[in-house]
Image (cartoon, rainbow, N blue to C red):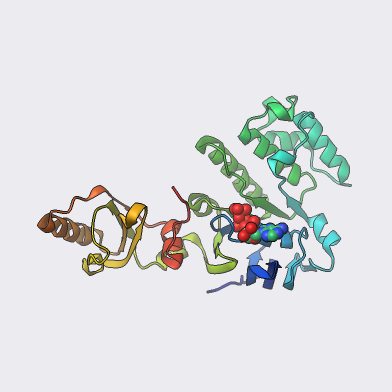
Length: 314
Ligand SMILES: Nc1ncnc2c1ncn2[C@@H]1O[C@H](COP(=O)(O)OP(=O)(O)OP(=O)(O)O)[C@@H](O)[C@H]1O
């Protein structure tokens, strides 16, 4: 697994460990993030994403390991690092009784330098709401404001912890556009998410995290190529645990999930042959294949293959 980048990294993390009650929740991870890159930490709830981000941001102290941000030792010189990073607040931490513009003015006053507020209001699509109280904003507008506040001081590196959790698909896409614009401005963006589609859409490289460890790190396309299976066949059926799906043509991997292991997922590099083999097999045995569908492999399948678990629990 290639954890590094070619130029001097903007973020370098080595053998990072955090324990709670003696139990490691981050278990010796190492990786680098290049300048201008959108780097994603993808993993299920409790994987250790927030703990990792907050150690890099200087909000939690690691038990072991090294962190450098912009060449600065982030454990020894937390204040110097704070000047070059922006951290998205949880939208619940906003001041409810200030307007959008007042919130930006307040944050700008904390820093010696600030970006022009009018251009921030426009680029975060908040012009219509600039005089609206925060408590009257929608979820998407609150998230946009939270990110605008994180970039008031024009930071080089921006940390976004699950920026679109809880948003509807339209608001999520609006936020993706804003994150793309922030990348175009040359910022390095470190984000965590448990939405594989978000990681695929936004990230140059993705580290998949599970139980405190990085289990894969590559570009989204590289991670999917590593599966050696381009397609997925899914169905639900009453079949015994030993049903020989792995012997169908093209099948590289068989996974079972759901209620009584009735959901079957086949990863294949020869979709048509797998499908016709499966239908013949089921027909000969009188097995009903419910909800049979096919799709292209995604990061979700990479996670499933590496951990045996689904990333998102339906
Ligand atoms: N302050 C703390 N004290 C004790 N345990 C903690 C503390 N903070 C986090 N943990 C534990 O560490 C593990 C990783 O938590 P973390 O919040 O980093 O995960 P995450 O991947 O960000 O998940 P989520 O998406 O739920 O935020 C969890 O098991 C969590 O219960």
